[in-house]
Image: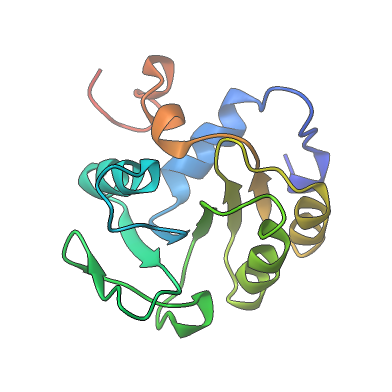
Length: 154
C-alpha cells in the first residue's frame, strides 16, 4: 500500500501502522521537552525504552539533553539517517516540519494526537513519505493485537 492511498479521514489500516512501527528504527521527535510532566517527555521515554533510537529536537539552545540523549536544535543538524519524524508541535507548524523531514530524507511523518495538517500530508506523501496524523505511536505500539507482528511479548 502506498502512502498516496491513505485516507486520513478514516481509521488507518492496522497493517499500515504496524508496518511503520516495525520498520522504523530512528525517530526524531520535534518538540521534545525536558519537562517530565509533558506528554512528549513520556512518549520519548517509552519509545526509547522500547528500543527506538530517539533523537530529541528542541529549538531552545539551553536544552542540551533529554533523558541523557543529546538534543538537536533542528532536523537539519542531525548527523545520521532518520526513519521517522514525529511532530509534537502545532498543526500550523507541521507544514514547515514536513518540509524539513523531506529535506533530511525521512521515510515517515507522524503527527501527534491533536496535530493535523492536510497540506503537510499531501506534500510529504508526494515526496514518498508515509504519513500518520492525529495518532500517538506510544498508544499504537501497545495495542495488544499488534504485538505478535512487532515480535514483542504479549
